[in-house]
Length: 201
Image (tube, rainbow, N blue to C red; front, side, top):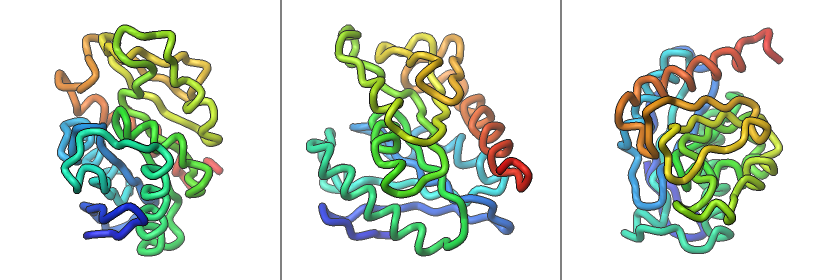
């Protein structure tokens, strides 16, 4: 489904389930797409615990750009498209997330879209080789619980456990989680299932 935003159209691929318990909106990294192995694994696993999953191709990727450019414009577009998706699934709790740059967007906009939680896959703590340029404040400022899943070989770094509600570090994985994406899906689904139980509020 195409969704118009203030900065151009986005494209959402939505997978529905028979008895939905929550809406999970996921997005890609800077130069990636919504068919990244970890995003597909999270989609499949989240569906198994009642998640309607929307994988969103952001406007900058629709234009063919490989970098998001202005964070302000990126966040404005994201907030608009999430509002549209929420309108289609009223009453469902919202969780949003993404991989790499998509995880940053999800953290920055969590309060604005009234998300209940954020799933941050391969959160890029710093540019490779530049640990002094930390983006940890984006995690701390999310304002909601954040699940961070990182690989211990990620050149973008691994966030501190204190900066997330839960940090899971997968041995042998890099930034792309190519070794075992299903393991990423399992971690996310387990966390979401525990959060979305009727008695967990």
